[in-house]
Amino acid sequence: MYGERVLDHFLNPRNAGIIPDADGVGQVGDPRCGDYLRIFIKVKDNRIEDIKFQVFGCPAAIATSSMLTEMAKGKTLEEALAITDEDVAGALGGLPDFKLHCSNLGATALHKAVKDYLRRKGDGG
Image 1 (spheres, rainbow, N blue to C red):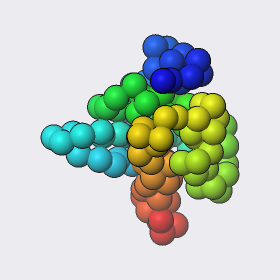
Image 2: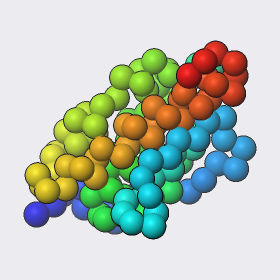
Image 3: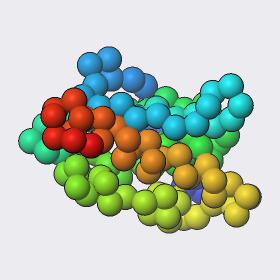
């Protein structure tokens, strides 16, 4: 059902955890009734210097969150905002159709974290 890359990111998630003094935080979902994701970012010179995640969800949600953080780390804010849910699923080698909704958390939470950072900085968002 799951490909090798999905299983690797599920069993060995990268960048799991929190950044207590995050520059931006984005969250999607509802922990009371389903998948929930929080993304924390540290920004330096318009680049995502560090990124961490907390997720409550299925193996696909964990794997997509892990892959998303790997894709976003080191990217400019503009490049991070260009990452789509399809990019994340594709980087994992695909997901079963009935699990594609799990990848929909990642890009949205990342975009919210970037917008939160810009808002805090006074640049809108």
